[in-house]
Every structure is written in structure tokens, then in C-alpha cells.
Image 1 (tube, rainbow, N blue to C red):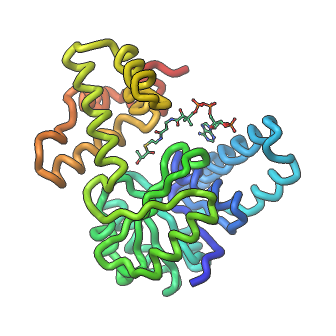
Image 2: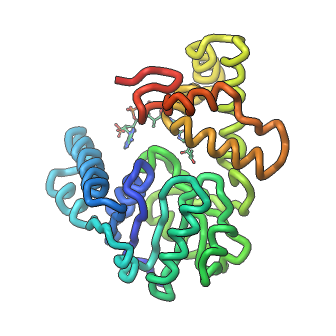
Length: 283
Ligand code: 3HC
């Protein structure tokens, strides 16, 4: 199973980060999204990120030009015909992801591995939308993708050992660290991270301390790079809520109940950094 050509479905925050790291590792990347404008914006974001590296002296201008050439863009799902590995990074919605996988299964060659960057949804359920569940796997990158070392690799019920091994090796080629986990709501990363963030929001909701104080306690007291409320804004409050709901329904335990304040902010459109306002305001 040789993997040379990668297709990334979704040119949002995670999709562009994933395309960037594969391009830097000399893979041919097709960045796909529904509209031309979205893929162009995604490619621009990647170019800017390379440009910052050039400015910092971490990449030469010539190398930047070389690496960016590794990425082509597409708005046609038929481009899947040319991919050895497809990584889906669309919104966290099981119906949308299942539809995408069903389409990809029809179009992609038989050998193609279909991976999902889902942060909490069942790989087994996503795989059931295809006729190749043994070639479906979770490849959960962390945000910001170019910086974070971890890739959580999730085995679905039917994922073949050889597919796991190929993805594990590939992750190492990206200079990242693969960690194997089983398919369970939130896997390991978000099962532990999200209840901490949710608890920080309850702490604010119950008036125990200000948002700045809560973040300061966790930053300075636990050596976290960001306080939990800053991190929630960074991830996106809609994403945090969605993952908490997946944990809550998946485990059926009230300890995963999303904080009402989180729901309120999402309803108000205060989604964090991406909307300009969450717990904090961004200009
Ligand atoms: N893209 C590329 N590079 C970036 C970047 C981005 N979006 N953001 C920061 N960087 C780079 C900077 O260029 C800098 O690189 P350099 O050392 O080569 O100069 C380096 O990262 C450090 O950045 P800064 O100096 O600007 O800022 P910080 O030192 O504060 O680091 C941070 C920023 C890396 C984001 C750090 O605050 C951090 O690690 N935060 C926690 C991130 C985290 O927990 N992510 C996981 C979220 S959960 C998740 O993704 C799962 C999902 O399912 C919800």
C-alpha cells in the first residue's frame, strides 16, 4: 500500500493545516472544497503560513515556492480518482460525514484509504457508510496542525491492521507522533480535554472567578500553554459544544452535560476567535 497522493476534503482551519504538513513532507496534495473561493482562500492561508516561516528564516523563499507547488486545488469530488489516501475534515456532523464517505467510496480507487479527522464521532459509524470499512480510519490532528506533534489514530471496528500500520508510518513521515486509540466517544483527547473546558465554563457560570482568573490559574498553576477559556475560543465554541453533546449522548452520563453558558454563547453567535468574540474579544 504505497501512499503518494493525498486528497484533503474541506479547506477550513484543520483541512488547510493538514494539506500544509503533507505538502511540506513532499506528498502531492489535492485540497478540495465545494467552492472555488473557499479553496483559493485555503491555499492563500497556507501560502501566508509558509511566508511567515520565510520571514523568520526557517524556510528559504525558493523552498516555499517548491512546497506550495505540491498542492493543487479542486472543487470536484471526482479528483478522488487520483488519491491513495483521502482525509476528510468537514464539519462535525455525522450525516454530512456519512454522505461524504459514501460519495468518496463510489469514486475513489479500491486501494484508497479513507480517513476522517473527526474529533469525537464514531469511526465505525462513518465506515458503515462505505463498502470498505476495513480501509476507514480516524486521523485526528490537533490545532494548530503545523505545530502540534500528536496525531490520534483511531481504529474503527473493522479497520484492517495493515491500514493502521500504513497510517502510523505516514504520520511519522510528517514528523508527528502517532498514538493508537480505540473508537469511543471523544476518543482519548477530547474525552479528557472537553470536560475540563466545560468545567472551566461552569466555574465562570457559577461566579467562582473571572474568566481571566480561571485562565491564569490553569496557565500558571498547571503549566498549560493557554487557559481553558482561551483554548475554547481557539478551538471554536460551536465545536466544543458539539463534542460535549457527543460525549453526553454517547455515555449518557450527566457529568458530560454542556454548560448552559456554552449553549448561550453559541446561540448568540459568539463562537470564539473565528467569529471575533467568544469569552474574549478578538480584533
Ligand atoms: N499555524 C502555524 N504555526 C503556528 C500557528 C498556526 N496557526 N500558531 C502558532 N504557530 C507557531 C508560531 O509561528 C511559532 O513558531 P516558531 O516557534 O517557529 O516561531 C510557534 O507556533 C509558537 O507560536 P507563538 O510564539 O505565536 O505563540 P505561543 O508560544 O503562545 O504558541 C500555540 C501558540 C502553539 C497555539 C500555543 O499557545 C499552544 O500550544 N496552545 C494550545 C494548543 C492546543 O491545546 N491545541 C489542541 C486543541 S484541541 C484540538 O485541536 C482537538 C480538536 O478536536 C478540538
